[in-house]
Length: 180
Image (tube, rainbow, N blue to C red):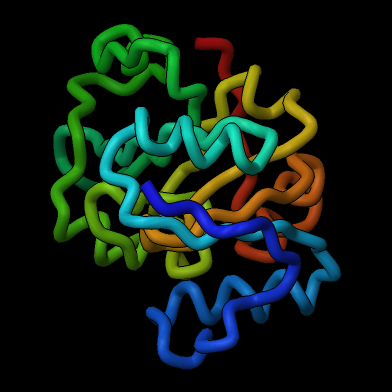
């Protein structure tokens, strides 16, 4: 799998990239959030993301997009890749009955991403606050946060505190921290 060298600037061809990715770089600059970036072959699995994490010096996180039974409330769960996910126990922990994976159409509508590219940066598209962000405690306490830019061919590394204290408030979201 190809993984570029780490750089600290947006891609030169950012205007040719997907709108969400373009917006990510604008917002990071506006908020003064430094980042490191790699470009990579499409990362379709967490195993491939593990290689990216090794290059970045911090693990890529697993993003799971879920909804309630009525499909009126959506959840973006961000957790360590190695943790197992159980929908039933997660539903109980949040007090939401019959939680399931959201459809690709809902993911596109609320995050502006496709399956395999769910990312916390997609909250920039959730202007109506339909999506609740759930961070695993281990993720929230880590020094660095690595995620894709809304497509699985570019990954960013930022300080987790910049995510929580600068980026999320800009998107009008708060992270609910849960110990999974």
